[in-house]
Image (tube, rainbow, N blue to C red; front, top):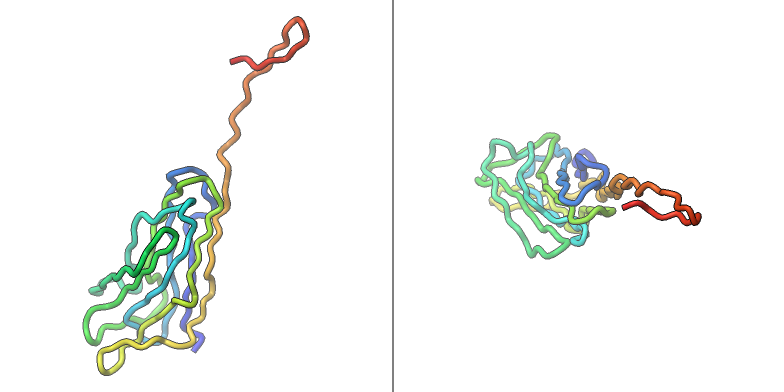
Length: 168
């Protein structure tokens, strides 16, 4: 064991504007053949929202089903599994990607809930069993708030009675 791992990655390091989209990838490596992954991602619903999801490179060119659990604001409960009695994958790559959209310029924290992570191994009877000993190498992403550039202040003009007021 130990060769099977999962981590969160993002194509962004900061949220700079409202409406900005960024991709969070659940990636990893599996030497043991698996037929699916299930996990809950948690996030601040006042800061970001989920726009879309798609399967990753590990499940490419395979018939894949997506199952959404009991999702609510701040929680994405998702499972991807391969169809077919014998379908399985090994290797390193991405399990799935989630596109988020910024609702505010804020510090965004997205967490992979380690207690809910399951990599499924298909048994001879066709049912899946949880792969034990999966290492989580990164379960939290923190995207800093990068404030918008400061607006130039209005020029100041001196008035004869020595008061300074902004020019509008």
